[in-house]
Image (cartoon, rainbow, N blue to C red; front, side, top):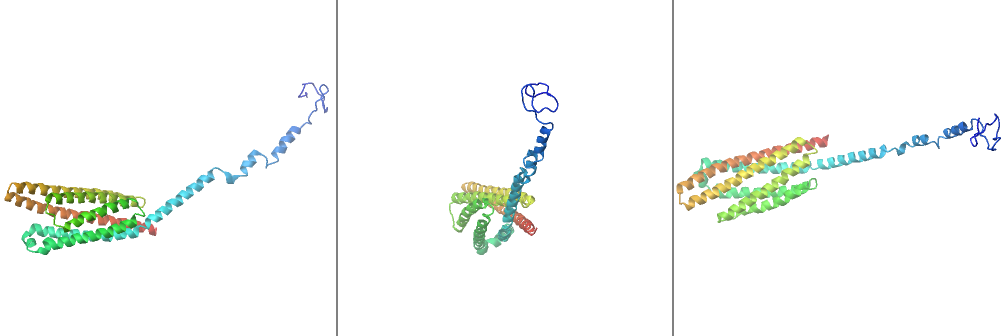
Length: 299
């Protein structure tokens, strides 16, 4: 063997180098030293990591995933509690459907038996005012229910605001407005407020039911498009009657006035039937919404 200091030859069994005097380690000492480290598992790096499973990096992620899952379940249970308020909306919209059914009957009588309608003041003025009053009462009750649903979906708050304005314009029907232009502006403004109300009303129900039943949520989007189409037809009807009558009266054309009146009665009948169908579809969608929430709660 050679000295690790001066590379001089060292005789076997020598403990120091004969040239430089450096001490020579005993054979196998280095191996014993390695064995010493390998026999101390508490200080070995590999054993140190293997003895710390609680500090593995995957554990915090799994805890966060569990917390997120619990939070989603809590939000879901919170939404399902709104089924009681949805049930109230269902019965209120049934009341609306009855109002539109009576309006449809009046439109039918006006078209097929105009003389019968004209001879009964109750049918021409009293009953329509009663229907308007019931409509306002149902709208107020609906806004109260929407104030509860606002806790589950914020957009119901916007529907609540536009619904309150719609009630104010509906109340103007109790007053006899002699100026046709003012009556036209009030009517169109009321329709616009109704559009904004239904936009947030249907949109809120669509967002509310999205996490429970996506199919019902899409039905609410369809209901909004149906309602918008019906309102646009109402606005077109009001504009047609206003400008047609104004031109016919200014031309002193009685025949034209009677023709426009007959057309207006027919169009009013068609719109009354359309309104009834729209509300009927909404009642069906609300019943499906309530049913889906109740089934999810039981599950």
